[in-house]
Length: 64
Image (cartoon, rainbow, N blue to C red; front, side):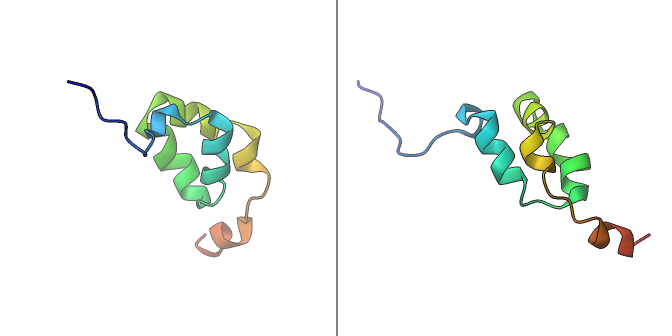
């Protein structure tokens, strides 16, 4: 039997730059505490420059 071709791609098949662009919309807390713990490709992607071009420290500092 032939395998069905899925129109969806797996997260682990995305390029690190694409993941970085997606992650750039997340909060600082998620970037530091959640994303690096998911898997190695996500941890590598979150360390790239695309996630850190703009960081809203105001939202983070309100709680502290």
